[in-house]
Length: 254
Image 1 (cartoon, rainbow, N blue to C red):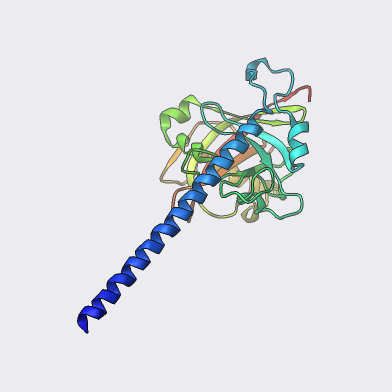
Image 2: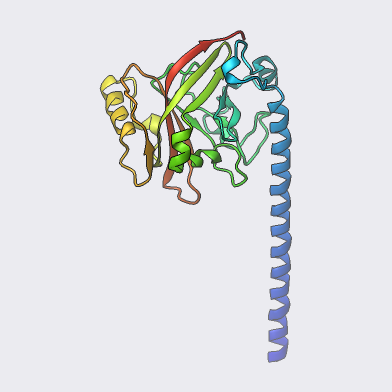
């Protein structure tokens, strides 16, 4: 009787193990497939971008007309030298703010998501603080490379973020990179209130964080900043932020 019982348990265990292997394999295959599809799509998107050096620009290097034929939600492009961050920025028109958290430029479900902003921010970067979101992907894509700024040497050597919009090249100087709590910035602070914005800028220049890199930059409420936000591994209660202030707006041929 005992032999039959243990034999049954053994067989059941084998079945569970086999099922686990099949599920893990299926998940792994889908993850691999998703990554390959994401890489293929990003390669196609990158072909809409000119490789001309930033210093030599007279014509906008981003073919927004082609990108917007694919998806009219594309309204800008972000590039950070010495990183892999070189992506279109999207803002959902109908689907809701979190749509591009897990959808790509073709509006297909994609665990990589897209680089995006929420509808609380204007698309011309005229707001006091434009918050831009992207995933921290294990393969180094999307906003994972923001974590490079955790290294003080890298932070000191790499100062600028470039954002392209139709007819404009916006240049931002990075003034802080730090670990922050996961509060929703745009819902927490009313940046239309000059006093609130002034206080926020003071905190941003001297964040009370255990991990922070910063440089001395004079900020006033007339300045316009961007905040790039991504996750920190499994630390769901935290975000890693890289912030820059607009220092140049160059008009280009669209």
